[in-house]
Length: 74
Image (tube, rainbow, N blue to C red; front, side, top):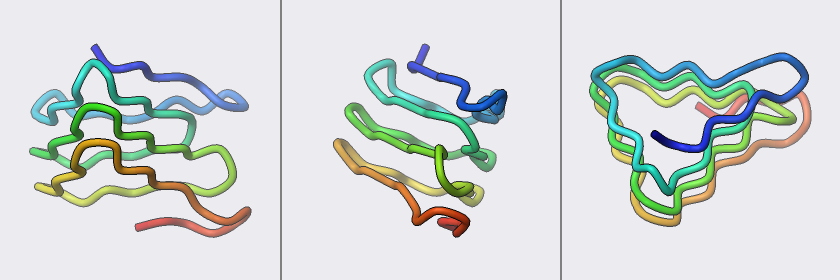
C-alpha cells in the first residue's frame, strides 16, 4: 500500500483499479482516476491545491506533482 496521508482532514481518493506503488506518496487533496499507474518514488502533494489525475494516466517514477496555493493541478 502506498503512503497516503491526510492534510487538514482531507485524504487522497484512490479507486480500486488504480495501481499506486508502495514507495509512492499521496498527501491531502489528491483524486486519482480509474486505471491509473503511480510509479515508485512519485510524490503527489495536495496540500495547497487539489491534484486531479484523469482516468488511465501514467505518473512515472520519481515524478513530483504539486500546485500553487488555491490552484488545481489537473
